[in-house]
Amino acid sequence: METVTVFGLSVAEFEDISLKLFLTALIAYMFFIIWNLARESKAGKMGTAALFFALGTGMFGFMAKSVIAKMLGIE
Image 1 (cartoon, helix red, strand yellow):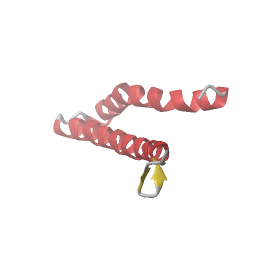
Image 2 (spheres, rainbow, N blue to C red):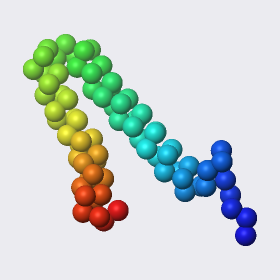
Image 3 (cartoon, helix red, strand yellow):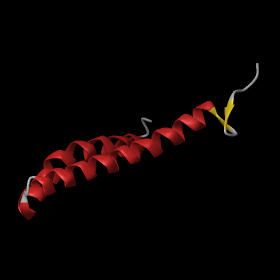
């Protein structure tokens, strides 16, 4: 059986790199959206902090999940 490669990588390696790269880009874009929302609504310093805390907590939890799984050896 022939091994399928994408850009010289196996499909699993390509998927792993793509997932990490594009998920990081998506999270950075979400932070930009939160910043833009705070700016357009004239939230001020306290309101901006509240937006980043409230909306960023979900993203932090998603990232922490993978770190905790690696620490426990579940992954």
